[in-house]
Length: 108
Image 1: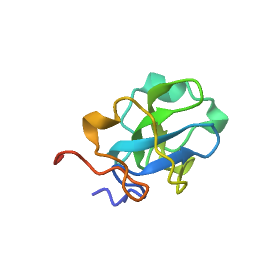
Image 2 (image 1 turned 90 degrees about the horizontal axis):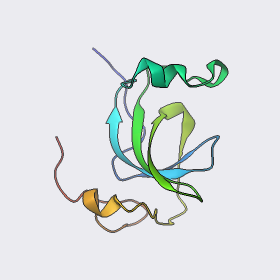
Image 3 (image 1 turned 90 degrees about the vertical axis):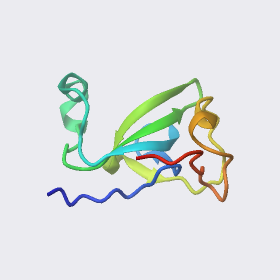
Image 4 (image 1 turned 120 degrees about the vertical axis):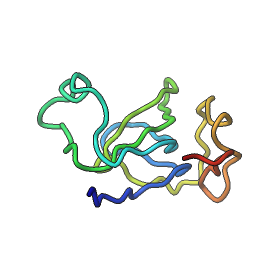
């Protein structure tokens, strides 16, 4: 049985430790659940372990909005209180409250 526990929760704003982007968590995989091709595309010296939570983010940087898939070791909580501007946020979440986004509906 997998005993990994996710550090971040749905609706939480996080930042990447090394790259200049932030986002809102909208799903969590308890361990790596993407393609080997995606994993192998990460330079070996920067490749994160597979046996940790991976987060799906509605992400943004200064140029664009996108969906990111990021390992827990590469994230830190963002307590700035600044909203995220991703255009898909209203499809999943309500308005920001105390630095987090509440879910608009129950998820499985």
